Length: 93
Image (cartoon, rainbow, N blue to C red; front, side, top):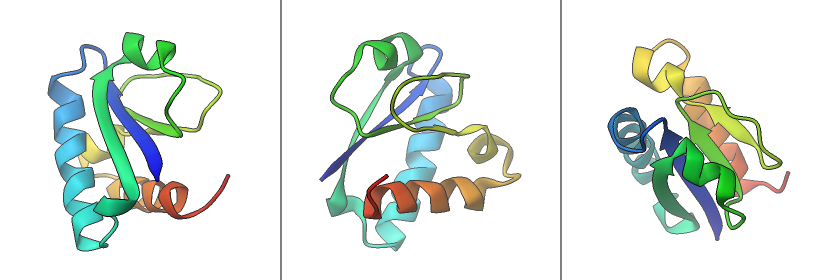
């Protein structure tokens, strides 16, 4: 099972919006049981070593794949973000 962390600056507002959209998509795709989801701040994400990939509304560079979640907030390019999440859940990278 993959572990995905969703984060934003404070770990509350925009990450919650992203989380809700991702969970809805994963439920529709029958993938909720294939991923463990954590939510937190960018500062927390930088200290975690137990995640497979991160979805972040803030700029972030780490050794694990990081998906830019801003399109989930604006709606422009949201489908590409959701498909990338799906790809990282289903495939090795």
